[in-house]
Every structure is written in structure tokens, then in C-alpha cells.
Image 1 (cartoon, helix red, strand yellow):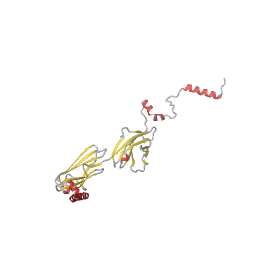
Image 2: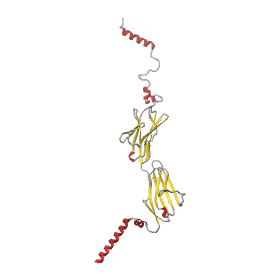
Image 3: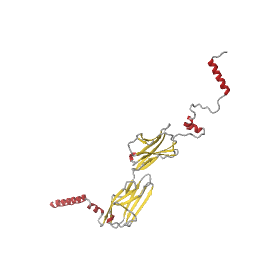
Image 4: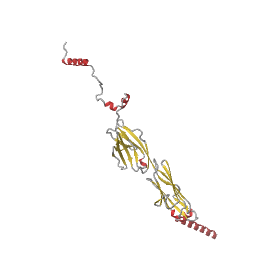
Length: 295
């Protein structure tokens, strides 16, 4: 039987395959060997091999950052095996892209990205200078992979500063003791050094005045600073300021009384409206007496 030429060639090809047998070694059905191994981490893990990973966020990154209003806020993002991928910071409140890599897209110059590399790990920290209460919210660090790799961070901005206990004006008799207590709050860290000022002069326990006691106690992000002056004199009167480092100060005015007059009388003497009220009261009593006399 005579076979057509094309069919004869095909039969010879099959005969050669049967004689040689299958090629030795691994045959992959994937037309791009190695591609799936590099991207399918789950399959590789199931086979017991070490996964060839793409960009990954470092574990243990903080998800909550607290800062005092007016201070620098730093939101961390650490990415391993970045492999040329882009890293972006997005504000979730309005879905605004604040920055991609080191390029910022917001007109608010307080927002910046600080990036550096240590080995195979890249740091992409979003920094907000002089943070305000309006900056509080959720920010997300994203890597442009599929699926998306992201890390949300909640920024909490709290008011901090100094508050002096008691009224804004303090009256003390000459020769007695003056005691002022200042409370300072600076979340999330303990406040820095606290300085007491008399008018514009710093107060020191070892100063020439004598009888000065300064005591500072810290508890977490709060601190108390106590100032004590013994045997006050008229020269101790004036403005006292509690000044914590990097935070808003607090002020109190101190008046030293040199006689036995009560504080209210001194306050009224310095208040013109009090004098007018007293005069009107006397005038009213005089009119009432005249009215009763006429009857």
C-alpha cells in the first residue's frame, strides 16, 4: 500500500518518538518556566520550598501613633524586597494621595516623606510637621502590587501644654508662703524639662533669693512641677510662668499684701467699676433716707 507523502512523514516522526522515548529531566507545561514559582507563594510553601517573595511589609509596625499638637508626627512604613515597586501614602478621609515614593502631591508643605534603605528593607515614613487636631485620622501606606500590600496607621493628635492650678490671680500676705503647682501634659512621651520664670528671670533653687524649693514628678505623659517660696516680700510679686520645653506655657499673677486688709478690698481698690458701684449704693441709701424724712 502506498501512503501519501505527508502521511508517510508523520508516521516516520511517530516512529522516531517511540524509539527515543520521552526526553529526560523535568518538563514544565508552563511556557514560561519559573514564572509561576516566583509568584505563587502558597504553592511553593506547600511543596516545602523557600518562597521567592515579592514586596512585604515588616511585621510589628505600629498601627496607632499619638502626638501632641504642634509637634512632629512620624507615621512608619517598612517594606522588604521592594523590587522597584512604588510606595504611596493615602489619607483615607478624602482618599487623597499625599505622596508616591519621595514625591509629594499635596500643597500642604508640612507633609513630607523620609526614605532610606537598610539592606533589603526600605523605610518610607510620612512626616507631618506641627501636627494639628485636624490631622487626626487614618493614613495608609500602599505598595502597588497585586494583591495590594498596605499598612493603615491611625494618627491621634492631642492637646498638650501647661496649666497652673488655681485662679489666674493669687493674693498672698507678706511673710507667708507661696505655693504654685503646674501640671504638664505632652502625649505620648513624658514632657521635657520644665522651667519656672519670675517675670522673665528663670527661678533656681540655688539662687540668691533663698527659701526656694522646686519639685518635679512625672507619671507617663504627664508631669507636675511645684514651686515654693517662703517668707514672701513685695519683690516676689509679679508674673510667674511655667514653661515646659516645646509646649505652651502657663501664667499666673501674684500680688503680695502688706497689711491685714482682705483680698476682696484690694481687688476692689484696683477696680474702678467697684468704686462706681459703691458710690451708687451710697447715693441710693441717701435718697431713701431723704424720702422717709419728708414723710
